[in-house]
Length: 243
Image 1 (cartoon, rainbow, N blue to C red):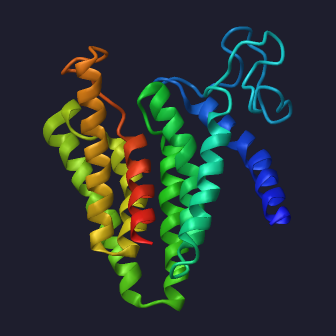
Image 2: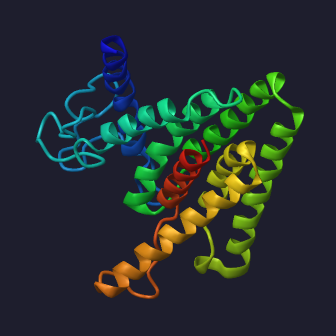
């Protein structure tokens, strides 16, 4: 037990800075170059100078301004991911795909919360790796698992993309569609009911939060909430309920 806890702490300390730098670099408006330094003083924030900007304190080493996601949030999300992997356990060999997906989706969600966009440099590797690892897992499972995952990923992405074309800003964004490539594949692997449950959870949570913001006058009917965080929570919730 002690070794497991120690390994968890080491993993969080090792992967946390990588997630932070991804969220920091890509949390910029569309069309803008990736961030490479502190917005307040311009100090470089690369991997060559990882602390304290890329640590849990999230502070620039020169001017002490806050940098990137709030302090401790990335590390807390990573800890939750480790707990999720432990609870889901080895199910049909899909655990590596789930770990890969979480590693790319968590920083993507922080970017979505900050600037309402899901960058291709995070969503596309998440999709490619998830599909590949599920294909490897299918070698020791029934072939129908991977076929269902492929149909689920492609179908969900096409559905999201079609709402963008038909409804514009009222539909899902193209970033959501690219994230759906991996979400649909991952949930589809576990079965059509799990995929449907994940979508219902994500949509229901989004609706509840929207109503709460409207009731407290923190948003208007024309406001646009980022859907990436709800996709993450809905996927995690569906997997926990299904296992």
